[in-house]
Image (cartoon, rainbow over all chains, first blue to last red; front, side, top):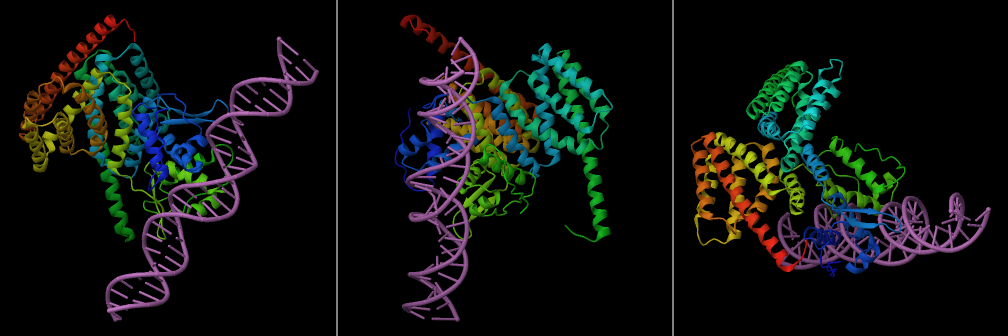
Amino acid sequence: MALHYDEIVRTGLSKQVADQIRAAILEGRLQVDERLPGEDELSRRFGISRPTVREALKVLAAQNLIRSRRGPTGGTFVNRPDLDAAGRAIAEASTLLVGVGTFGVDEIVTARIETEAICCRLAAANRSEDDLARLEAEIAIQRDEGLTDEAFCASDVRFHRAIVTASGNAPLRLMMHTVIESFIPVTNMLIYREHERRRSVASHARVVEAIAARDADRAASEIRGHLEGMRAVLNQALDRRASRAVAGAAEGGETE
Amino acid sequence: MALHYDEIVRTGLSKQVADQIRAAILEGRLQVDERLPGEDELSRRFGISRPTVREALKVLAAQNLIRSRRGPTGGTFVNRPDLDAAGRAIAEASTLLVGVGTFGVDEIVTARIETEAICCRLAAANRSEDDLARLEAEIAIQRDEGLTDEAFCASDVRFHRAIVTASGNAPLRLMMHTVIESFIPVTNMLIYREHERRRSVASHARVVEAIAARDADRAASEIRGHLEGMRAVLNQALDRRASRAVAGAAEGGETE
DNA sequence: ATTCTTTTATTTGTCAAACCTTTTTCGTTT
DNA sequence: AAACGAAAAAGGTTTGACAAATAAAAGAAT
């Protein structure tokens, strides 16, 4: 074990311990799947109490850096950094910001257009037959008119996720978690009360067609068109909502 | 306070409490800057001990959802979701993945090219005079031949960050944290031993020139050229490194 | 009356020593 | 040999206390 276990000095003992262990993991002094000393042992080595050690470990566990198991073969182990786990963390941070209204709808749509256009381009170049099959399966689902709005939105998210996957670029896929798990749901929530679903499905189908044909330019321009259309509908919806709010305020005489 | 404080049932008490409080925050039942009951009070209401409550709170604090202060006016408060804090979290998750070699250099460069090209386009359209001044200031720094490699890389990161900021798109800026804080440093670390810095600066200058002229196409194509050039140098460097490794292995007779 | 200092109350931070629960191992019994 | 059960190991939880920070109130000095 490559850890110092120095005596700790001033404030925030649990934080300091968490920082030390985190640093050891990040610098590779603690290897993947290596077992840390038991909590009792750690508290002795760091010279702090077990509850404080546990607070530190909980923080690291919350950051997906370690995991703990009970029992004789149990203990605390260093986690292998995982694309999906990191993606979930990123999605959560993004969702929180989106939920509190940090971003304007318009700039979200712009970000979607530009980033998804990239993914379509790369997908057209790199897609496998499996990717194509997944995309077409979602379109088949979306063509069902009896689908609930929730099911449609879920399929829409899976569709866009499949495009990202088809791009074959893992770093980009990581970045796109923000779009897929936050931006798409929030735009869908606003739009699929007003929007004609059939038009969306038709757009989706044209995107897939272009990806199937390995035509990057057409794929990008189709998704651009799809999302620009969405932007228009969104803005109309927001305008209507705003004027309703104004009307309601005038009627009820309420401000704010 | 809109929390249930139900009796908890089976496993992972601290986790369950953390989940309940997190849900209350995400659903807005706990508002920003609202003060939670004291730890003593929480432990009574949830029917669990204070150390367990504290473990739960530490987890939430690690996710930037709450903060705690001591003293009479102290307590635990709900954090306002913050773009920079979320960005740091995203950067940390990304850096971990990059550090452990999850991604190939080539796909990282591809992701950089495509996403940074977007930012250049938008920057050309939306830049302010301040943005422009920041970009030019970094170029002035980079022209200094006496700069250390570390200082040059730091300026390079600031330069690319300034482009993202100049795009004027906050959602995109959030996503670009992964590129700025992880992908750029790792590529720089590989390249600036081999690479001619003057060529980089010249590329940077041409990008800024295009952004200044509000020429989106040229800005995008300049950054593409810059990064494609980098990809070539990177691949050469990696090839050389690989052949050195092979030679070393043949000489030393060691495998892996 | 105002300002500086001290006290005090409140709340998070830490500690210590237990006990509980889960999980594996190993020995005993059938 | 198989099934069962006891022991041991480790994290999970509890109890009750004390320490440290800090803002506000009370008191003392100017």
